[in-house]
Length: 247
Image (cartoon, rainbow, N blue to C red; front, side, top):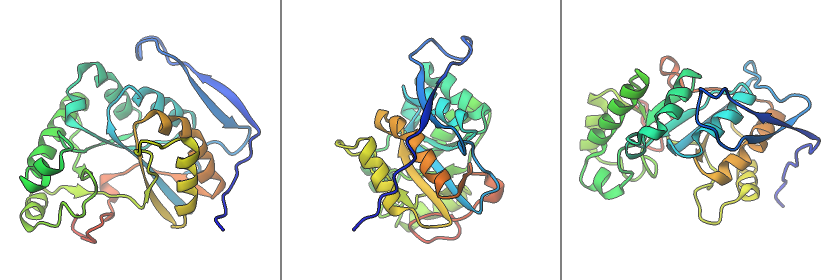
């Protein structure tokens, strides 16, 4: 029998409105907040890294709203083809200025181009250049589309990654929020069934269903005694399916 932790449903709603000069008018986010223990405990013994793939997107600002409400900085892995869209640049700059980490997730997210044609490093370099143009920061952390296995099980690509001193992060928990039938309940159930480590790296995506689930995801980790952290290059630790301590 799977034990599912049901959270205290006594909540209050808070509307988050940003100054007009921060981004264009849009629908406000309804953030459900508990009346106690809703703020990130950065002194907690256990640590969770929330990571968001495939941005920037129409949901980036609203994800940032929720994270801001709980004083949480997250790690974003963004795609170059989306970063090329000028209308999304403000969300990227906002994320960077708020202390979130912006890493690279390739230009195309195309398995054949990245791994079979061995364009992984060149695409990551191009994506990093765009991130630097937008944020004035040049990250060295990347996330391999579809994970580092099996695509990065290639000596030539690995040699290129090491020569460029890139670091590669996978995840410890896949919420499967990317599936076509994913919804808030399924995302939460999947997450709750797989949390047990002292350090968790959660794979999320910039999707509407993920945005809806995000407050409850945060509540759950707080209830379990986790503090939220953002990736820091100075405190890098290996987290890849290859088991490679150099990445």
